[in-house]
Length: 253
Image (tube, rainbow, N blue to C red):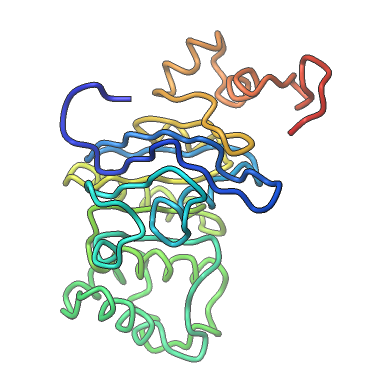
């Protein structure tokens, strides 16, 4: 995507992942530069989570390469430079908010109380430090998951549906913080199927059936599809009509 400029922070080279006959990631090439927010947009089952897990080194590719800061993944030493927020919370329900965050902070080498306090304030959980996670609402658990992802201030951040279950006001705060992180040099890849968050990203990657079908800024993709609506643009790039049916009459993938 960027023929010149700084070295890519995240790369994929003909990246593929197959589960028997299912090609979850099918020949993806990526070149993500630092200091930008990238939106990975596509319907459920399009390969977003599998692609992120490959890039983060949490799953081994069938073929091709994923690289983080020039290092081929998986790489154990590189994991400390990555923040990954999965769709499902990886939290310990019997531990308190502070104990969960302290555990994940220690794993990533962020042992200072100041770092923990900063992310607790960001996600508005400072007053729930002593609460067991099992007593938190679903939205609060999402907020704690984000705190665990960011506590070690990683330069590479993968967020899989980060704002699901988060109230609108806090969602705005999250995105403002994502923008501050990018301005400080972080590379952020946000997976979502919600098109109304797309314009908060610097660049977009549309994915369907394991393939990146279009990429560019929101304005570029709208212009190319001759529409003001990103959802309509996605359907056009995917070869679907307004009701999500293939325009050539072939079965949907």
